[in-house]
View 1: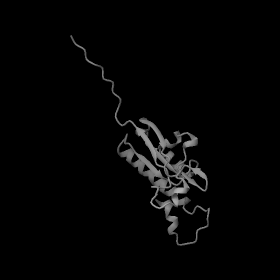
View 2: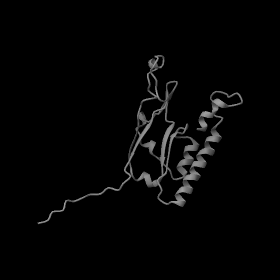
View 3: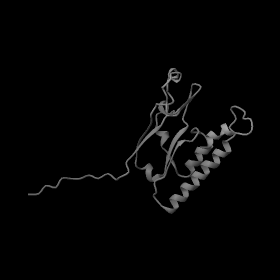
View 4: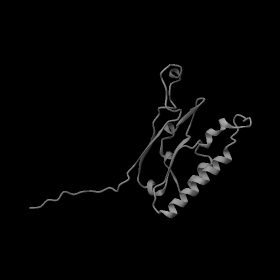
Length: 156
């Protein structure tokens, strides 16, 4: 996760300045190229890119993933529920699920499970009470097998 490498910076970092923006675009371009390569080698392959991408919907790096014909399942969450992270009271969507067209046709639903971002601050100071992450996980449901309808056989 390149986005977290800011804590290992050797130069002072100006707050609010995204020193990794170019890096982020390079990483998304690499993921997009890998996706294209997989789909050329294996047409119809199911490709999933997911997790904490540390970018919002309007970012150029996420637009690069969409150019690779990856479908953003996260866009189908209601706007009020779409957040996966809260920083200083501002809710953001930093976690995403992108899938190839082979999986997009089998999409059923996607929803955040608000466990981490909404974690009450009062619990943070209590010993023995921990949260797993400051991000909310995303639950995505797909049908991976084709639907079949079985009709009963009736004979006399």
